[in-house]
Length: 519
Image (cartoon, rainbow, N blue to C red):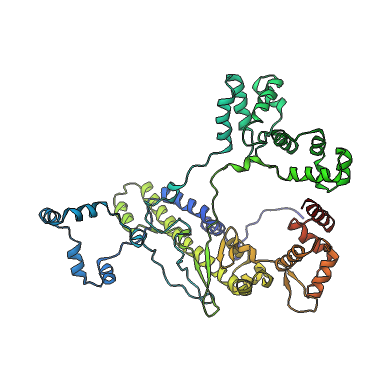
């Protein structure tokens, strides 16, 4: 059959992802901080976008709150004449004038006005974005823009700054000081020097013995154990400062792997000590700091800001509302567009203004749709996991993305993007939205399935409550869970235990015996 070219007309339906649609999908999975940064960039780029501040109260609203007529309020708001002000001031006694000048405004309610909020519906009826009464969670308070709580936070000294100050006092030679500063720059947040000394010597063009000599000086700096190259050297430095680094302790440090394995017989043989001395040496090692650098601030820690608040009503229902502090408030300045569109002279300028208007309108709609989607998903999660909110993690139900998507009429991918990097503040703490999704474990008697997170919590409770004389094995835990109605395999118990970083029954028994001997 010969090959030939043909022209055909075909009619079909397909979903086309426009750039704006792809950007709207991207906005769903952004965290509150990333979204704020994106909106700030758009405000700088688009002249038609404006940030919405707190609306000023009208004279009628202020008069209504004060209980006075609006006209009377406006008259009182007018500034008095210069003569009247002078006359009033002259009539005040001397004590009153001093009191007026020196007494600060102590009315905190006036200093920090509450944010205006809209009433929110209950969990099952919440369909529109609400505004939280938990004011100030995202911005450190609901006061004006002039109030900056970060101004009251003292600056933390970093580990590098602390070591650099000691370097200027300990070393006067400029070459050695340059080497020391380079080594300080290689110290990580835990206090260890990361890098090969031979490579450092080659890079700096200095002999290796001089690099080692400078490093030895840095290792006597505060905090003890800093600038070590590994854990054994870090512990050895601290023991030398305490004058406890004898030959037996040196062998103990060189064989820390045996301590991790709880091989006390091998340690006694290598260190040539009895059981009592080994217990003292083990207690001495446990009192040391394996990461001395963590005592210094390594940077500003960004706290978790919840996107959704959940609170209980007295009748047992739940209210779900968005955190208004995490929602960017922007609007399109139609008046500014109408003003500058008249001055556009070229097609390029008119095209730019039209594009800015379309982008601004799209962004405001996208932000509104994002808030509604987050509230809808969070509301359904609260409805599904109300038992967890009321009674705790043991009552967490199995939940997946499809269950939420089918309940609210959305696609699973949309629910997945909404729950990414979002947090919910509940009476039991702040949880990521993805925390409420867990796989199901069948019930032993054919009843309702159990959540994997709830089963993991039961396993941890059993292990925490075990006695040193009766350490629970994985088989024993499986048997007890079967008696509680949970159909689970032994390998699943071992997997959950390892995910919680709980050692095996043999290691736990050794640890408990060692702790009893130390006591």
